[in-house]
Length: 179
Image (cartoon, rainbow, N blue to C red; front, side):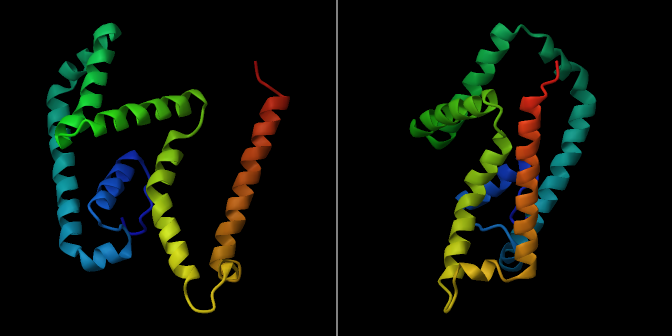
């Protein structure tokens, strides 16, 4: 919440919900909406305690769900996942959006693309674009302001190194496949 960068799927969903409601995650959220931040923290603490209590009590019963035949379990889960957004908003548009993003996620998963990174890009992309535009609109500012600061250069350098390592590992796996 302090940096506006999600570290896992749950935080990503929380940040996405905040953006939908017009709240921008980051230091300004703690300054401007401190009571909301306390409510979020308190709610998360209470939810974790409740989940622990319910989980300890009902874990054996919940584990039996995995023994159901997938022919019945998968359609039930799909039905709930697809109709949930449409029913909660009262508009059929969200039904189709859910199906579309389900197919996109399925295609990304089958193509071995990182679904989490794609979701983070969808959530964080507009924030990055807005802040980049705002910084470039400052008087006498050009793209060089990002290349002249030591911390910015450190992050750019780390990004280039990580990208080069990933590309190298990808090529080396193609040349020497393990059987």
